[in-house]
Amino acid sequence: MRSIQGSGKTDLLGLDPEALAAFLAGLGEKPYRARQVLKWVHGRGMLDFHAMTDLSKPLRARLEQVAETPLPEVVREQRSRDGTLKWLLRLPGGGAVETVFIPEAGRGTLCISSQVGCALDCAFCATGRQGFQRNLAASEIIGQLWLARKALGKAITNIVLMGMGEPLLNFKHVVAAMRLMQEDLAYGLSWRRITLSTAGLVPKMDALARTCPVSLAVSLHAPDDALRDELVPLNRHFPLQALMEACRRYVARDPRQRITFEYVMLKGINDAPSQAKALIGLLKGIPAKVNLIPFNPFPGAPYRASPPEAIDAFRERLLRAGIMTITRKTRGQDIDAACGQLVGKVERRH
Image (cartoon, rainbow, N blue to C red):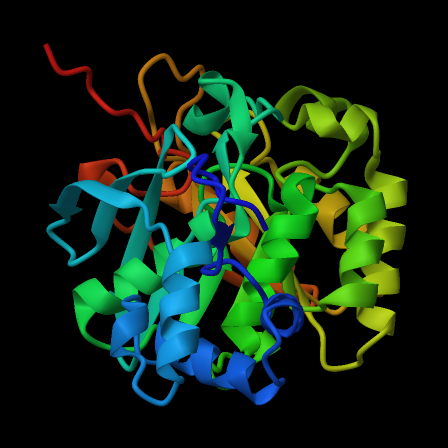
């Protein structure tokens, strides 16, 4: 992978194990060198080639000449009253994204961005309002994890690709980053601890199942095509029947899989008892968990959050139908770090 900074050097940070081995083979090195470099860069968090003491001195000098490990720059860190952390990151390749760490008892979840902006323009999401700028390189995706682990001084237990962007529209680089996340010498996360959220890009869901299966979350938000066309415009290309069939194919590959369906609760829009009934029918036969998400407001938003009693009634209907359902606790809302609030804006300096 060539430099995203225009230096002409190879960007090592985003190379998955296979690609790193191929790069080092091109330098005349044996396969075990890739394992050593992986352990230094990702396992130990060391980016200084000269400090990689089990590499030969000639190799260290050569890497200094032909390779680099560019990291995003932390522009701002914000801490919520509930302990949630949000970093605004300026990217080596241009633009900015936001990354969120959510601490919980016995675990810590990092919410990672995959694009600068988003092309999908979902009606309830602030990210889509700013439009799409570009895909992140694999190094810019994994760099968010590298930086968070360094800043926190501890391992991250769970990754959710639920930040800015549609991950499956950046398939190549997202898969490379997820392979690094699962590499034992790097971050050592099992597929169960990595969740990719998609609005329903059906062909890429099938490709993901074949190449790098992880836990899957689907941004559903409506039980019928008419409403979903309005809330999630991608539905006009991949309507619910095609999406549900893709979900069934995904779980059929591995009986341990259970798909999480995300459903933002919008007052008077998608929270009626009849819509809960329709959702039950839609999910029939799919190993599923439903996350009900109270709507998080942003400037200019045309919606309001469903009242707690409406969310509770909706959840109870799903539970009575045998569908595992939880109401997601809103985290980081006071620093605009909650679901649908990420915008990645860097203020201009005058």
